[in-house]
Figure 1 (cartoon, rainbow, N blue to C red):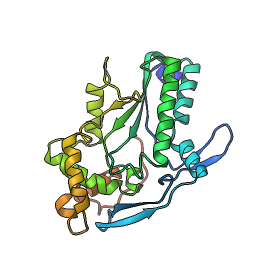
Figure 2: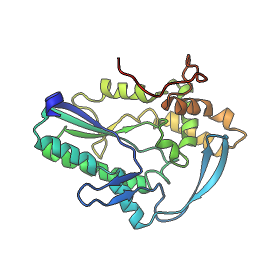
Figure 3: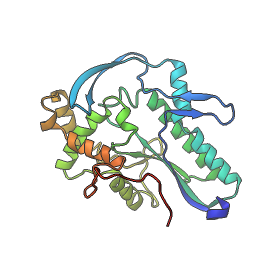
Figure 4: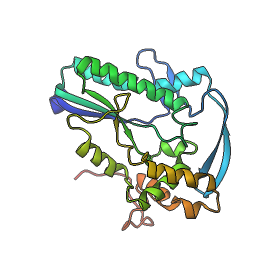
Length: 266
């Protein structure tokens, strides 16, 4: 890092992985996406077929919960920052951001109130630890809106919630994709005197969680069935964004043409 870049002004740490090996112990942990305490019955969506159905998720045990924190918490983030600081490659005024998602009450049974939520609490504590070493503004967790990612698509209920959310936010003129909301983050949330929540996070999920959006999403939620999905939600937008993650569904690309997978440098 020192040889290629000199010093770093900003580091964004945004990782989604199901497995992590602790570099000190060599132990490998696997995360689980489960509720805590009791089984949860929740509505979800098969994005391939468009079928809306109920599913029951069994709760995680203590070992699974601890493993999820080990994988998806903030340990590796803090390790990176500590090692970069020890190496003297952090510029004066250095800042680091870690992207997270909190969600709404509709997703909390499997998200914030589950194993993922425990990992996110750990993320907040690691941000506080980094600030304790580097300064009061050095590290922030940034709460973002729901977007289509490979990670989010694997979480029960989240794809169904996203299809409804996208349609409502489009109708209200508030829809943002990944790029648009990060643009808003950098333009409006990283200056001085930025409002923080009680956990000292920066919030860019304010449009998603606004009363007008959540009231309408909550109104539609109990009405969602396989038959009403087309009217109440936007599965087409969800599928389009998912395909584009992997380079498909791009206008002007002929996907029937053979492609040489070898990239030859100029």
